[in-house]
Image (tube, rainbow, N blue to C red; front, top):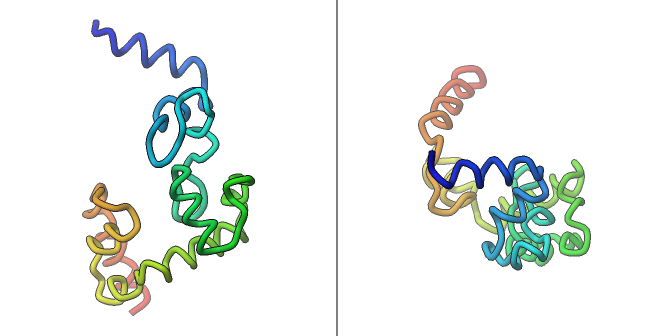
Length: 131
């Protein structure tokens, strides 16, 4: 058995706070594991905003005080406001109107392209229903 598995099991046993702090430590503008930033600035909202740098960006374009109150992105109203501003500031409508799933994904998630086939399938099903 590798040494990784017992380490992962021990982390899982500590719970979601420990997992978030470990996984996101020193990433996305978060501090080290002891800072608590990994869990504090975990993915929230309709756009799953993750990391202190991204929360700062949300705060700048929405005016929502999400650095001091990150839990706001877990509430429907602020999450919708942040998502709408996120969408507008990145001009995502251009790619969405062109049905360019890859570009929409890039504008939202950066270089990650996981699930493109499934997103394309959802788009095709939706268009079959609504168009």
